[in-house]
Image (tube, rainbow over the protein chains, first blue to last red):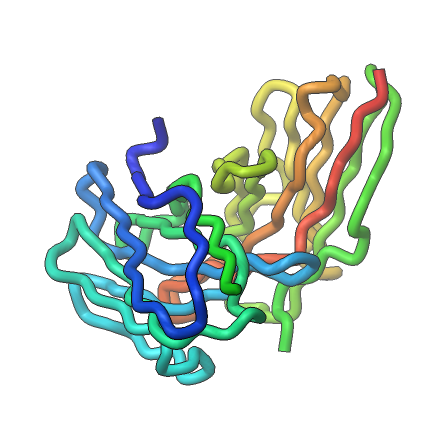
Length: 112
Length: 113
């Protein structure tokens, strides 16, 4: 139990589907992150919400849309994805200006 | 531009020997260097960290060294155990680097019994 919970653990979706990934943290942190992990690549930071304020990452395609309704919950809305978007999507949280991020177990996404 | 690099994608070590995982960084603004361990189908878990003002931090079998002049953190595991087999990610963080963690590509460690 890491204190950061992601659902679902696995997701298979078609390119025309709309789905959402959910992340919930019970650690009282005020910063939450979405990372993408593809094979043989560094963990890629997608989005940061710090003190419920979003930090844009301009390199993330608009088919990924984050939502942070409160400091404990983070969503990643997905629509019209491409097969190359298949990856492990990791949520993390931290206390802003602290040095340690806690990760969820990830959602393994397959786009067919 | 990749600010944290792990140039060895894999490493194999005999049980009982020392495992040395290397990392390099380019941004001198980083304040902390962290190591995460990741098993398949799980998220990374924090292992150990070191402040940029120190050159060594030890926690049991795990020791992290920082050669600041060379911009080179490294993780030493001694003695290595089969349960240490995992992917190890080096990460860096700084107060003035946008509250982001910058990760390397990971090194897959296999400890051979």
